[in-house]
Amino acid sequence: MSTTSLDTYISNITGKVAIVTGAASGLGKKLSERLAEYNAQVLLVDINPSVSQVSLEINNHVNRNATSWIVCDLCNLQDIQKYLDHAIHIYGHYDIIVNNAGIANEQSLFSQPDSTELDRILALNLRAPMEATRIAVQYFKATGRKGTVLNTASVGGLLPISIMESYGTTKAGLIFFTATCKSLAPLIRVNAVAPYFADTPLVANNRLVQSYPLVQQVGLMLPEKVIKAM
Image (cartoon, rainbow, N blue to C red; front, side):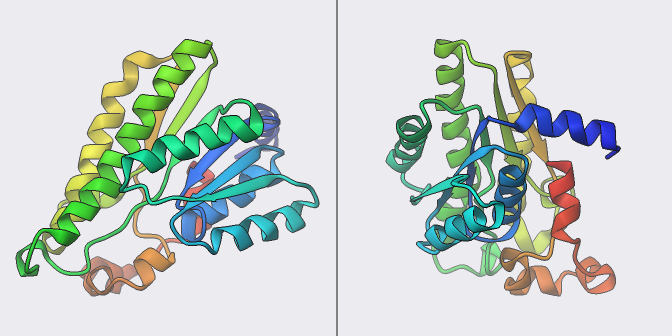
């Protein structure tokens, strides 16, 4: 990104209110840091209570009260409305939603004893971002605010990986859903990024990802490269 492009990007972010899910670690944490550095206000959303410490660390890093936090389980639809309402309660509005929270299957679908893992992956990776986008679109239309929704998909949604059937299917669905939102522009822009496997806790601690031949051959992508695309 050139200096001019970066300056324009920062000016567009300054003063905006962003909501980032999955913000306690990985790409969500790094993106929240970047948004705070670029003078946005950021609501950090995560199921992990450590999100409170992440918020404090970011605030200390940028030397201002740039972030707040809320603990939510996005598999529960009520919690999605909860964090969106919380953003309005704290900041008066929101401009940007980053549907970043997600999980990967720990074993092949066909090795699982029941549908427990499948149900959670579908709920978190696909239903949650669709529901958040549904609510946000209605909010942006009702208020007349220009809004942005960014969905974190994956290369796994573009290139079928036999051992990650559930994860790849949800990410493919998220890419398809994002494409169907094209008609909402220009008032509401809905986009997605579909990165290669990045060096985050979600990936680094997943046995299936680590056993994938391409990962063994070329390694993992630096998270900073993904953040630049976001």
